[in-house]
Length: 413
Image (cartoon, rainbow, N blue to C red; front, side):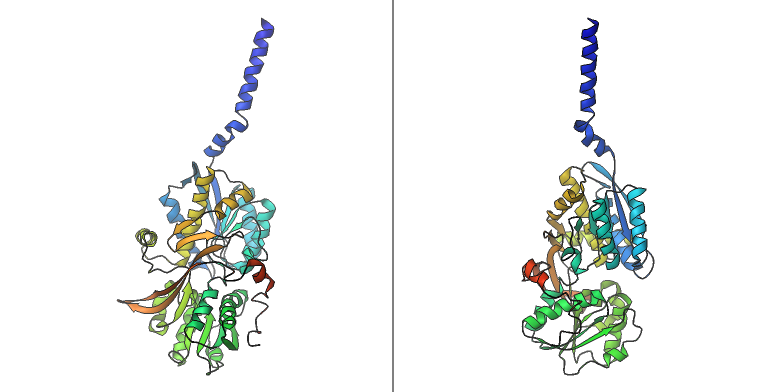
């Protein structure tokens, strides 16, 4: 009898041990929060962008009560300053080793994004890029741990180049900030503009942070009928004002990426920006249920309308949460990224899907600066539906072409 009771006891213990193993692991996992390291710039040159990215992200988390997939979500917001690569890596290392985060997200600057792309691949962490737009992050240097619910630098440039040609412009001057992002944003416009038959007659590149654009504006060939540009932030504010002051407004059309007349600087540019055409994946005036709800909630919470960056932060949070709902809270490196890439989201900007490289497929909006009531606004005038990063080329064809950095100085040939 003793032997029977002894054997029975062991069998019971083994059964309990088995139940506390894999069968109970999902329950244990569900009891622990999903930890997200959200690395943004809350100091330095990108402060305004970082604040908006944070506020948009927090708004969505508030809406879902910081829970998804049956798990609490805990967010560690870290200020990584400007585009300091070593600081970004130090913060990422701390988030992984000390805070044991499951997901990294955020990042404004391209240099940090490239460095972290290698880091997340080494640590097998999902990396959700909220802003950095460098083309090759989801092209020639893509990896299975990246998804970007924001944009690809040249992605929206391609439809803009076709629009410019279709409107009758034939002779273009390229102008932009003299670094990789400038080459990609402007190069994408040039590629489709010249493919249709347009001609680039001049390239002018100004250093990032230029205080006086007069010497560069003086160089513009007056035979041009359009100037195609990329400037952002304070550079964009100065450039648009000086373009008008220099007497070029109304004589040579000014067309660029949306950052040229971004909502957070447009009121300061005022009449100098009137008539400027730009392209963006977001437009504040979009009249959709998703955008109207987002604008109302954001304005109520923060006391001012959202910006492009606010929407990107909001969509970053939504993408993560929807994937958690699908996986019932499980976060498993590349598998979780595949789930995120499989999402089709109704966002304030419109429907967003992802290609196999993790880049967004989304609407591209052509906007014109007009006065609406008492304020200056980017008014949508044309929509290119569901634009992908390779435009009309296959990925293989596209990635065999020279990069836009390689094409600097060669568009006139």
